[in-house]
Length: 96
Image (cartoon, rainbow, N blue to C red; front, side, top):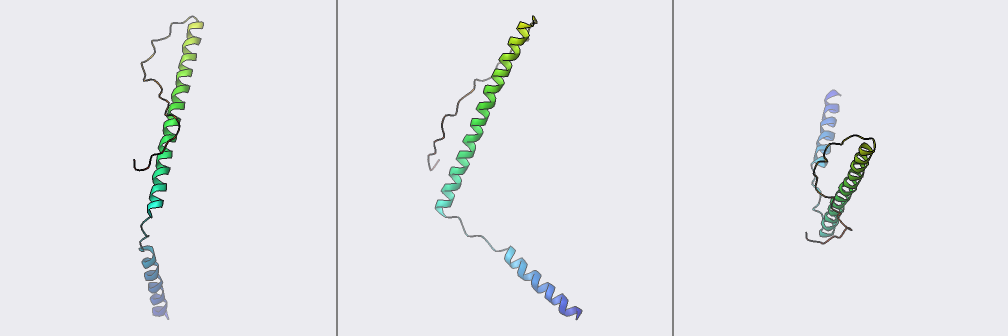
């Protein structure tokens, strides 16, 4: 009885392993294009987020320097940073 149970467990494990190792079909050209467009949208969203963060940081820094001057203190010199660059509207060009 025990050997029959063991044989059954081995058979089920072998069938499960065969299904796990099965390969997925290659994605179609349409699916690849859709994935590329999704990646481009995601990258653009990251650029928009970085631009918005840059603008907020500039505003906070300007408010800090204004409040420090108004309080009669001498603020330290602001650090030079690159200007905020607006990425513009999302435009997707296939093939890039």
